[in-house]
Length: 395
Image (tube, rainbow, N blue to C red; front, side, top):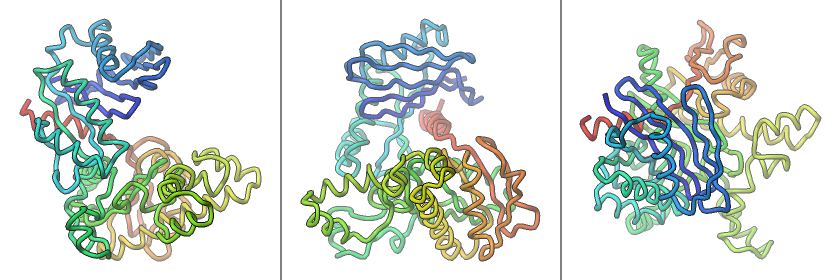
């Protein structure tokens, strides 16, 4: 048996799960938030209990130490030498990494060089790696990339119709994100229903959202692009739109292009259209009270997802299975019904409303006579990280 920590480090946060492998048993999970602020928040879940504390944690180094001390104090491990590996989520692997890799000095340098493509994420991911590397210097560390799953796309799917030298010189192309989630659910549905999963569309619909067209287990196309801003409408992101809007609004408002792009990332989507919230639950509550803008936001969201489902239906030459996952995909019963009802007549999708009345569990929600199987499958990016860490470190 091996003990592996799966880590997702943000600029001021650290999410983690400790697995016992290969049983894939979660021994402890938690999140450390507000690192570097006046008070941090440490939430640890272990043995059915949740403990919350508010220590002062100036950097990720102290946050990692609190985590490791907790493992010892709670006797989850008797010695830190019991930890055999650490797997790190890294958002951007560019064209350099088509799969997870053991982190070396050279790999860490390449991840840092790719920070131009993910300035909010890759530096934070590296901070987490360095903090764990310092605390556990004799343990192997593995990088698992959000972009890796999408590296099987062909050039006619990932090259933008721009002057070709922008791709050659600056690597401007479609990369796609949420790859670890798309990988997990596309593999999981093949296990659940191997006869109907040659052509799959995976729908990772949360506050951030993307779809992927998957053929024979490999990504053919995905909705997010050069950055996570592209694709379907999201909680605060606009998704696809006419790029000339950026310069038009810059002239009209006096804001810089960077400021406009920041608005597209952080003040658009559900929040921008509804004026209520970036959270779909709040938007639905507002709809129930007759808020027309909230209703419009919901309609736009459904439309953008259906548009990509239709596109991928054509690209795959038909579809065998659609999978819903992530926050809304797993829990928003009404959203799934609206999407499936809209694509139903053209794609032959039919869902059973009783079966669709589910949240956070693996359920086949389509009817027996539906031409397309429709599944709800909770995502599990952490287990993908743990599996790849175990495999690459040969534990």
